[in-house]
Image 1 (cartoon, helix red, strand yellow):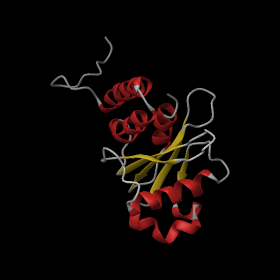
Image 2 (cartoon, rainbow, N blue to C red; image 1 turned 90 degrees about the horizontal axis):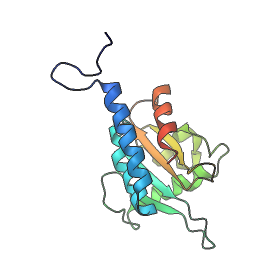
Image 3 (cartoon, rainbow, N blue to C red; image 1 turned 135 degrees about the horizontal axis):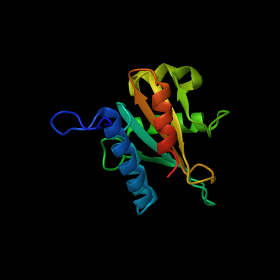
Length: 166
């Protein structure tokens, strides 16, 4: 007889709940009707599978205009482009997207962006996770930044690898 993923009381175990959340998040990402909807889903609904305090999404504009921007921030229906936090995040995304290895999932800390290190603790917890968001083999459509009070684990990196391809 195999063990059931259900615990007493009909609840599922944390790993099963996380897997179900990952499936739901992937479905919602694929169904997003616009880049803005995708950004909102990724920074708000990813909380069901990732533990973080803050999340933000940098939308890369590959058109002729080439204007990339902070498209979504967790907990807000729409970021205010004039808010100091959004300005600082834009500086962080510009700096981080210009570093080597930007197309790989990686832990990001103030030491990785020395020009912003002094201000980092004013805006974010100490540990960030850089996650390029891609569709297949195409270049990144944008970058997710998850910020937490604790270091990122290999398990977190594995979950991020699953959510970064939609």
